[in-house]
Image 1: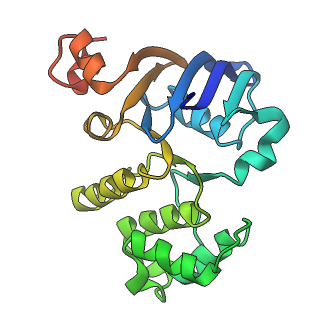
Image 2 (image 1 turned 45 degrees about the vertical axis):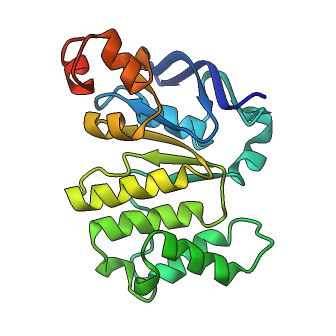
Image 3 (image 1 turned 180 degrees about the vertical axis):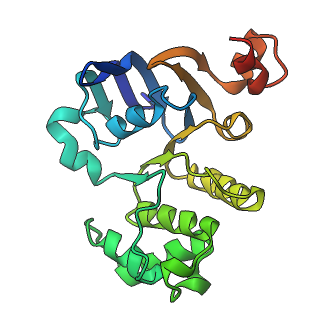
Length: 237
């Protein structure tokens, strides 16, 4: 049985004269957490946005659950969820109203109100459903962004720097939620936190100037470089 959910070949993105992503190829397996690491400007967010059908590749191919990205983008979008680096929430709407608004873009055969309640409970926001977004903490707002991305039960989730700027307690809650979501979904996440990548990810690619310089599981990468952790690996390449 083929467990490959996402497959890219020669994936390239050029903006003007700048090649931001340069011919990368990789596979993502079902119900895993796949990390895309790298410093600012390495191409990780551009790669994620191409996978999430937000940007079109300049060249190369993407298959998501066996579907070609170019010809099946609309069908693919019904089965993915995207959490942007900067929360795209409506500040003057309540927690419930935000989830309801984003949910309206998707087909769903069940009871929609029950599903919203179930989703808010999952991200620990059901008790705050009437709060306006502008009154939420950073950690609560990020969990709300995740709720908006998962309410339609997608099988693939894209997280772009989901814990950036959060305090340690809020980061830990996002980590716990990510592990819980992995039970029913495949997660692709970008990060520049090495401890986060080492804790969360089953497989990694590390980008530099749009190219894959290292790939494998955190354990494989650390062992291959005879290092104590990913931080040490990155410091010596």
